[in-house]
Length: 187
Image (cartoon, rainbow, N blue to C red; front, top):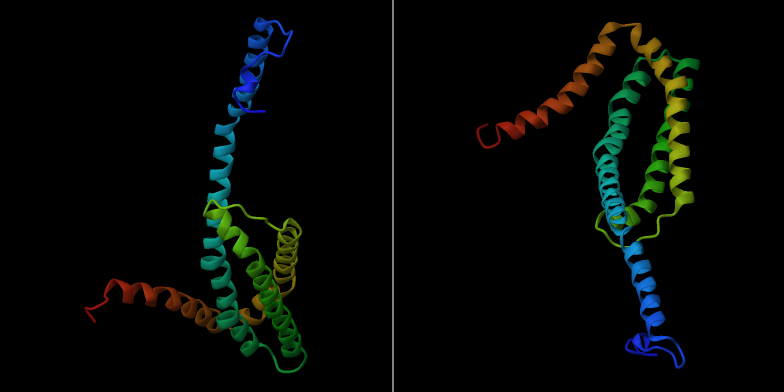
């Protein structure tokens, strides 16, 4: 059946009924088309959410993990009392570091689909993997908040100089690149 056949009344059909039925089909299609603006908005929101997630993971989560591993974990390990306390801290640090790698590996599996979504391409986002990543990170953050950070406060709080050194180290890590960028070529 060609498209021109759709506009021909069937034998014995009242020609006026044919026009009425055509209007029904046209109106149904136009009603379906009326949903398009909402779908376009949702697609734009999906692209933006994917782009924001990619940037956030790269700029915030990776950097957060790096700062903990480069600054916080060594500071707490270095200030822990030898023996049981130091072993406890080492076990927690090992677990948190392992969890960082696991989260990053899960993210790496999701990243290609998110990049496609951010670019407006069709993509299949593995929802089970996505939910597993969220669940894993919730558990990681809860454990760190419940176990490691209070212990870190106790250990670093014994000597204000230890906490101040950590604060200065974190500040310098952020301030130095900004200062170098500002004065590039003049130093």
